[in-house]
Image (cartoon, rainbow, N blue to C red; front, top):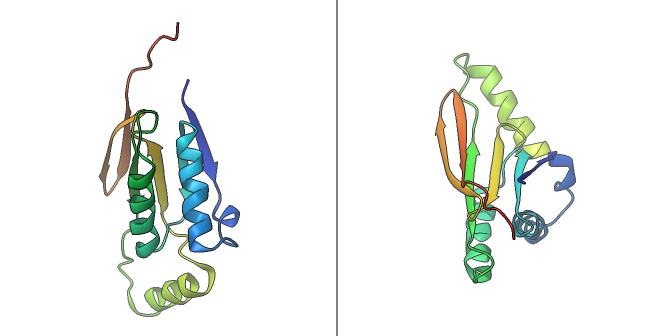
Amino acid sequence: MVTLQLMPYSQIEGLSSLGRIRKLLDVAKDDTVVLLQGRLKPEEETELIKATMEKINKDFKGIELAVVKPGKTKEGGFASIKNDIINAVLGDRQGFTLVGPANIVKAIKKDPDRIQLMMNKSRKRR
């Protein structure tokens, strides 16, 4: 059975960068796919990948990561400035981040209109 955990941004906003990375990595290590509202900072994404590489062993094969960002508004001008200010004050809550354990997530494909999550076939337990 595959578990999908929807995580609102409010669950990580009070954490330090390291705390955010640990929380996401701990959930992925429990064979759970996380759909996080919002996005990590680019440096946090880099650190998440580094931390994952350090944790890889025979039981934990790593993670798959995808970030879906909303398209730029065509209005530009004030709407764009307003979104930039909101993101600076509240954190980047637009879009979402998908993190899943590599032993479950086979691939993640994105295009502007959708995201596809391909999973490995489940193995029967003895």
